[in-house]
Length: 195
Image (spheres, rainbow, N blue to C red):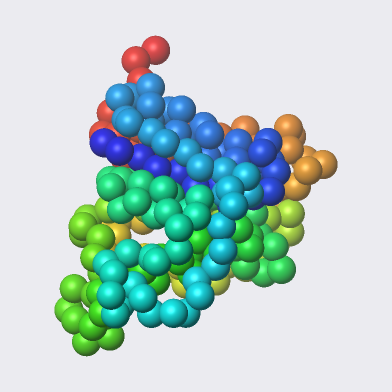
């Protein structure tokens, strides 16, 4: 199984990155071929709205660091998107990637029963962390992105949502979420690590 992880936080050792790293390490221990990208370290632009991916190419026309990421996601069986909540939504780094996934859609995506160029059946893991402890706040993020990604052919999606975690609580709260990540990796891989 090929797993690609996109870390959307500007913090390399923040909560969402730590949870994503645990998921990836657990899946790799079970035999997955893994690849991770720290989006904040890449040089890329957002979607230019040029429609070249609909009119003359089957991919995004931009050639930048996100070109490799988009290709890796297209080849993956499971995609992990990890992000903190910033201003009530995913981070800007991850949002910029999401905008560029417009290139995955076929030219007739509005009317086509198979609107996406991606192979169907991928699995999604969305890891969302927020400093706000109120689970009711920002609960709309997962359903919104899950809906889009199902449109893209993702057949199965999973959420790890950590509320009330921030830089000051990084070591106190996150162990249960690291355990969730490990258990989810085992579920997706269909087996457990032998102790």
